[in-house]
Image (cartoon, rainbow, N blue to C red; front, side, top):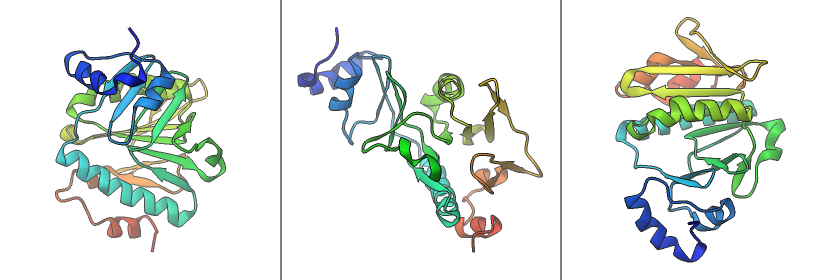
Length: 212
């Protein structure tokens, strides 16, 4: 049975006992607020678990490095995991990081992004392994997201996937230790940076990337 707006607290109670309470997309938009971390997939609500310390540290580090790089180069906008991405009617996701090129700012809405951004970054958590490596992999490709980055710190694995002409992702090989973006001009990420403890100083990384 669909859940109506009047039953928000009841829905949260239901969510503790069932994997996917259901509602219509417009109900989800009205129901979901800034304090509720949830995604929407064709009527199902996917509640997001709190992230680990390692996830948070990697997210904060990557946000600073990528955000300042893009801002310095005037390439577009980098948005974080509080921004809803509507890939198509009935499918709303909360990626960790989203890059939208300057010339495509038209897809930005007041409360969400409408359609495929130019690049998406997901940092794998224990509860998101299947979503990040399988479900979102297929969804982002189908929606036309040009690049999909997956960072799996526990397994020290980072993948950069680029959409080919057939609409399928092809994994990009490292070049001298770097994954080099095609969607974010000049951006490259040395994978060993991601496994350092502590993570390298973002300012040192940016200088290596040519940002004074």
